[in-house]
Length: 253
Image 1: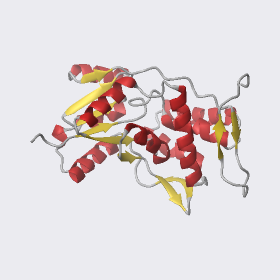
Image 2: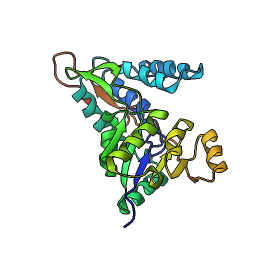
Image 3: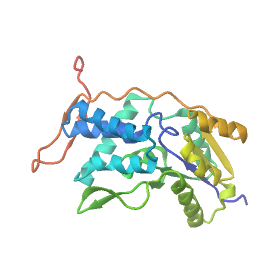
Image 4: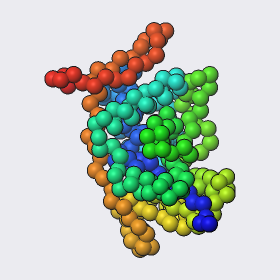
């Protein structure tokens, strides 16, 4: 009998062509009735942190301050609505990585998401792809609302390798028999932890490392255009839940 195997997949830039964190934040802020420039300010602040050398773990923590006070159920509902819009537009999933994921599933391997993103946006993607194991950054939720803080460490860098080791222990699997897929140099700890690492092209540093070590390299895919937000309706306090953005009507920007 062949050994049981796990296939670990990073999500942003690996299975998706864009970053779920940013694309969902744009949608979420619009659903709150915020102007587009509010999203741009949030994104530029995080990009500026990266530009001056702030570790990804710290920028990941800073990202979740944008949800301080948000109702967790409303965020999850918006996560599903957002992903439906991404799917309907097309181009959001990377075909080469999705094909690899489906091959693992057809062989009976257990597919595991290991992502710095968070459950509200990862769950609909996982359900769409038939994945049940999701290891992700965990925002703190108290009394049904996001606090803006995290529970534990962001699922980035070494934390992904730690998660893979724990998942392998839970499943009774040797990591030497497992595969992992990533697109960024920060995925190296995860990729180095398994017997069959696979790089998704896009980060020149990871691409070079993969070539030197003769790893399999899958093609990346260009980021799809951002979904048109159309009309967004945010309920005021006490007037019901936030409603998803509606597709733009013909002739409406």
